[in-house]
Image 1: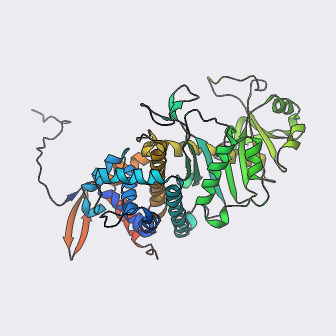
Image 2: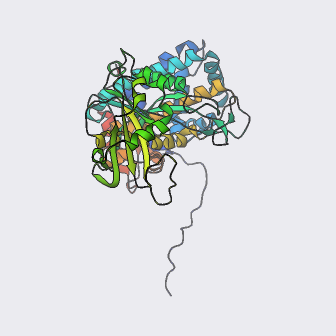
Image 3: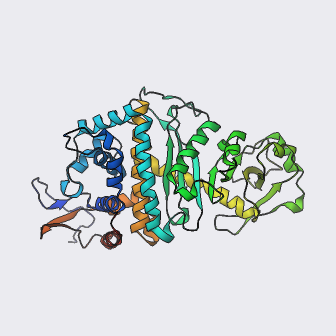
Length: 459
C-alpha cells in the first residue's frame, strides 16, 4: 500500500511560548531608523508637543505608527502589533495615547506639518550621503514625478466629495523622487485635496512642487539639475512660468494636451523630420516616431526655451483613436526646456514618468488605500505618517540590500523579510535574534543587517 502524499502535517497549537519574536525582519527598519538618526530628528522636531511628565515621546509614537504602516497596517490601532514585541520596538504607547497625539498635531495645523517635514528633509540629506553611488542624485541630477491619486471614502469624511471618475473620496497630489530602474522612489510631497479638486490646478502643482523641493538637499532646490515631470495635468502656463522663473530655473518635462493648434502644427511637420522612437530598453521601437514642433505661433506665449516634442505610434490592439490622432496613429505630446539631446532620448525620459504609477501603487499598499480618520487636519497627519513609512521602505533597501533584492516589491519584502520569525536569545546583557537556518532568505537578512551595522552612527 502506497503512502499518501500532498496532505498537510497535523500540528497542535497552544499558547504560553517564550523566546520567539514574530515580525523579526522589522529589525531592519528599526536599525535603519537608528543609524539615520531619524528617531532623534523626529523627537527634536516634536518636542513642543511633549507634555511635562509624559512617559512616551511624541516622536517615538509617530515613528511607531509609521513602522506599523510599513509592515502592512492601515490604521492607528495597528500599532498594537509593535506593542506585542517590546524587545524589538521598545515601549509602545497605547491606542488612546496615539490618538491624542494625532489630535494634538492636527490641531496645530501647518506648524506640526512643517516640523515633521523638516525632520524628514534633514535626514534625507544624510541618507543620500551614506548611499553614495546608490543615491538618486549620485550623478548630480534628480527627477521628481508629480501625479494625482484618488483615495476612496466609504463614509462621510471632511472634504470627501464626488470625484471626476464618479466615485467618492479625496484627490491628493503626491510627488516622488525617482530612483530609476535600480530602486523604488521616495515620497517628497503629499498634498491632501477634496475629491472634486481639478487635475489642471496650477496652484496645487506649484504648492506640491514647493513641498518636494524643500525635501531635497539645498543645492538641488533650484537649477537645471532638478527635473520636474508631470502628465498633462501640469501643462499650464502658470505652472511652467513658475518652474522657469529667474532664480529658480528648474528643468521640466510636462505632458501637453493635444489641442487643435498642436494638431495643425503636427500636420505641418515634414516626413523627413520624424525619427524612430525608443522602447523601454533604449532601442528603436518599430511603428513609433518622434519629432519637434517648430512652426507654431502659440509657442511665443509660453516660457522662453520651451520645446514641444510629439510622438506618433501605431495604437495597441483594442486601443481607440481620438479625433486629434493622425492617420490612424496615436499622438502624444510633452513640453521640455532641456536644450539639445536626441529627441528619442528626451521622449523616453518623459515616458519613464510612468514609474510614478508604481510608486502610487506602493503607497496604496502602505496606508493610502483609505484615509482612516475623520477630519482633514487629522488625515494630513496620516499622510505624513505614510510618507515616513515609505521613506523607510525606500531607504532600507537603498542602504542595506543589493542586486535584485533592492528591487523587491513591497509584498515580497513583507513576506520574505519582515514576516520572518526568530528565536530570541539573551546573553551578555545583549539580545540576539536567531533566524531559522532553513528560511531561504536568512542570508539576505543577515547581509542586510551587516551593511546597516557598518554605517556610522549619527552625530
